[in-house]
Length: 244
Image 1: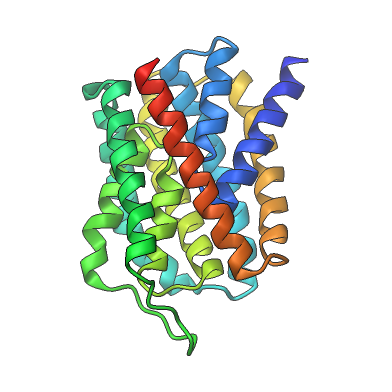
Image 2: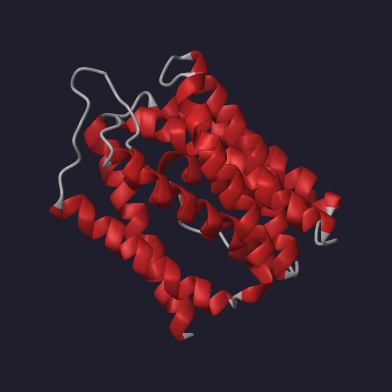
């Protein structure tokens, strides 16, 4: 019964996380509720994201929503940030990271309404160098804690002029790299539980595959609405956690 529950939680977290980010705010509290220690919860989430994010990224790569060159550009920031975040995980309290997440997500949501994304009407897109520190910082946050990381990446890539599907593909690529780096630090620290992570990751893979197929059937307007609703719900949930 526990195995089925883990698969279902992993599926739901990955499905929402792939479409609009913030799947960790579904998966992590659910895992905590069934009695798993916080550092093991984070390790489980990173392990699952390695597989679910790569599986969805690979599908979008085959569909030519991005190139290997686009993904390779992200490696230094995602790898270095994810590993640094994992090593710093014990230096910050969960409350501190929650406060940080609220400010980052609120800022991203406000920017989306105040500053219109560039758009890529000609289908030509290139990541600007000024975005590098932002991507590195998000990967550090992902390695330390993570909830809202994919949502922040989506906004970052959209404001760089990427289409929704390209932003989704780039987000999944960076998530794969940063989670792999962060997971290694939790594994060597002895915080990983195979008997939990395997089932959670299995659900995550199915959820990511389903989300990618659903994303192609939704209009740009529908996808933006989903992203905004998930962001608002995430901010509200984080604020509730801070006060209670």
